[in-house]
Length: 245
Length: 242
Image 1: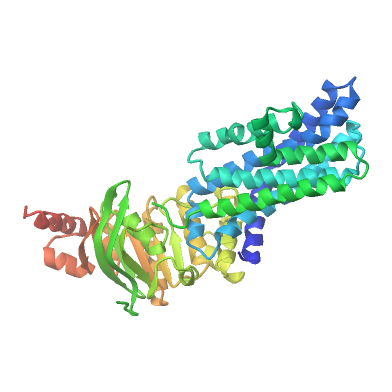
Image 2: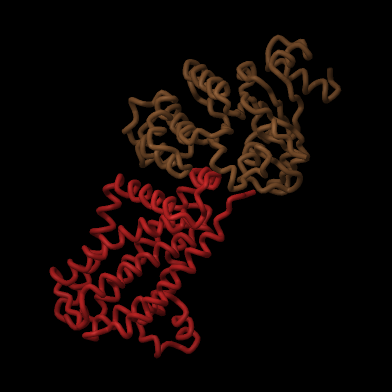
């Protein structure tokens, strides 16, 4: 991996996103609308909003980044740019990490906007420090990007790429502890949820929501999410082929 | 066996795609600092050969070397420029952003960007979004994105398809200027008229090289009035129909 080539690629991806104003608007506005809707749904039960609001603040960016990344890389593949890049000095890891850095920067902006909206406009009240919410949300978004890069290796058409979202994301959502506490799931599903990264994202957000100094719980969760990010990027690099049939 | 005088050397190159043999044990050498045309009907293996030279094609047998190194090896990636058949650039970036990105990836200096854009005659469109350009302009952006790195070998897959005659002539002039400056070029085309614009010719059909010659020799040996007729007469003689 070459840091210069990675940053050049991240810059190029950011320029592409910037040129698409509607996508930028959607990335920033949609999470706010969803949080706002959630606050409205539980308008007379602020306790419930305070409980699940942080968790969804972690889930929304994860989903959005997963979709955007898997489509973006699929475009590189169908447009032939990836074949061209594979004939240049650009490394496979430079490509993968370049995307992760670019979407990570987008994720920081997205998390700041969504968290600010949740806390100041919707009155989200968490026991822990608000900046931890932002950190967890950013890491969740980068996790979405890393899994999106990995998933897109297995998608050959746009139809497949779009359907990987429910295939990769919704099962994780069902067992992540939001619908049913993870320790009350059937044994198999409980073990499954121990393996999947979104569970740790929701756990981390839960700790921020309920504990005044949550770093003891959040730290290990973030480490596991970081491990998933690294593993997905590594696997994604391995599935990227310089030579194809 | 490695010949330093050759830009590209293929030995018994065999490629299988989708269970079908696309290149049949091809052996061919391509000299440096010249414009070599790879001509033949579509589906004949031109793109597959080009992909093998660039190192993005999985090969089933034999080998391809470029400047004495195995095709696609890391040492070559700075030296080989590849222009794919369909323009592969980013539609949501400007001409400058595209060319600058591919230049930066290959370590080209910054001033090379404007020079590459000028060499394909797109300076007025420098800050235009590529998605808003015409098809011909698009393929020239794709070319500029390869030229920017000043490659020693430039491999172009059907670069003149869909261009008007004036632009086609200008591009061939550019290719010859590059060759005069020491660049080796391999240019594929399915338009037989373009044969006369090359220094050397490789005629490829059904995965086999059926002629490795010069435009003048091709016409002399076949006695045909033009390249198209010469190609047909070669096929007829090989199939025993002459």
